[in-house]
Length: 166
Figure 1: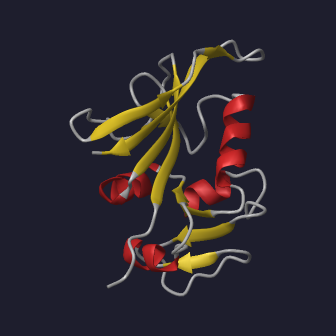
Figure 2: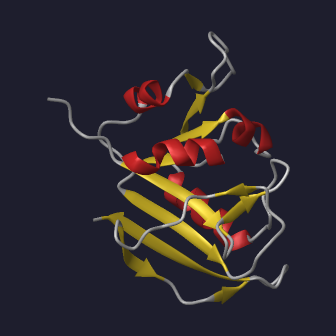
């Protein structure tokens, strides 16, 4: 029997679960990006192609980048390619936490497989066209909740939350 992989989702969401518009993030919160780097460095990150091409640095350094695409035989340098969710799971690390980092379709498909959610909750609503699935308290337990912080540059209030599947 194969060992179950540790699959975590990392995401920043607005009050209405908005995560993006026009393939761009809705905000820039420096501490959120620092937390993302701290948590994911040295681990495997899994993403869709739109998320990959929205990154300022590609592939993400000091991480195994798994890129999911539906274009058969597509190859992007510096990434391990996966042509299905199942293939992405097969390529994930067996002994370490794996981070799913978007976009919306990838989040939806991995949501039932995830054991942990790292969520930055931004206390505002935005004009979003892309949303994260609602977190059902019947299915997830909040195990960590930071104080509320305010970003110095953009003025947004946010907090860091961690959930585990019940």
